[in-house]
Amino acid sequence: MRIGIVCYPTYGGSGVLATELGKALADKGHMVHFITYQQPVRLNAFHANIYYHEVQVPTYPLFDFPPYESALSSTMVDVILNQQLDLLHVHYAIPHASTAYLAKQIVSKQGRTVPFITTLHGTDITLVGKDKTYAPVVTFSINESDAITAVSNNLREETYKSFQIEKEIEVIYNFVDIERFKRREKELLHFRNAIAPNGEKILLHVSNFRKVKRVPDVVKIFQMVREKVPAKLLLVGDGPDRPAIESMCRDLHLCGDIRFVGKQEQLEDVMSIADLFVLPSEYESFGLAALEAMAAEVPVISSNAGGLPEVNIHGKTGYLSPVGDVDSMAEHATKLLLDDNLLAAMRKGALEQAQRFHIDNIIPQYEALYEEVMNRALESVDK
Ligand code: GMT
Image (cartoon, rainbow, N blue to C red; front, side, top):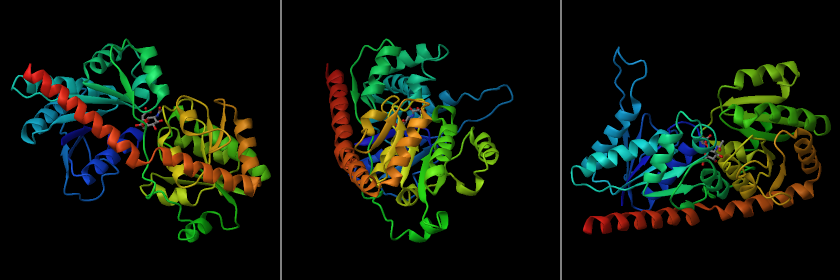
């Protein structure tokens, strides 16, 4: 198939997922065309079946807000027509679903039927999409999608609750490349020793440091754990809350034990040296970073928000606590880190659970959906 993938190219989970999906589809022989305003972060190696089309957004003195959506739709039209795309798969509804709808209408005037699939990822529904500024367009464009997928049951339910959706939303879970995240502790011992030179336990948090991630809770949890267990905290990623978190660490005199490592592409290396992954988010539709940690045998201490209970199984792969209950999260973390047998059992449980989301199980679900949507489109042309 010739598939156009549209996503945010940044470090966010939706862009990561979309890029990994495109790479996996290319490995299976499909032609994959990424259409984004900049090279997606995980699109970092040459692949014969992958093409990248940059959306150029020309500026003009009249524009306080350059019309990105028009530029994106026009690029989609160009790629559909010149690369003979069979379908478009857009990730994150805003504005990708409405731009795909427009592109579909434009090419239909030229006799081309190109269906589009919208994958809902999280805040496109739960935060931004619900806002009345966007809601009518989001509702319309989701309903106009030829197929809709959500990355968890929770997100599917939230979408039905928040919008008047007239179609079936299929749940296709996020996935992980188990081989890539396979724990390589011995190989990376030098890295572990550099972070924790005296054998301290390593807690890890990875995010884009937005409010929804509750990074201050990570620091509070760490502070409590560190009173009972010699430990270090690795903070990976960057975003709007980072300066405030840095001040918080200084105020709490924790700077010596907390390392900000910024954005990292080799997440599998960082995951490989961690003992616990901490994700106290206000909301997560899924929690892709937690899944990647679990694939590296890292148990997860998380909130029970959104789709997290579908990924992190309380007492098997880590522990769940109510949002904001840092005492409970710290208690769970401390208990785990002080009990080597329990930690070993949870590590095993984490890897077992990650296998459920193995890339090889999930990619065929997308391929089947593509086939179904293309067949339906062909049937509608025949009629
Ligand atoms: O919805 C967002 O906040 C953006 C999105 C992203 O691009 O980071 O994250 C969402 O999509 C990920 C991939 O499907 C999920 O793993 C994240 O849980 C989800 N984030 C939220 O729901 C806050």
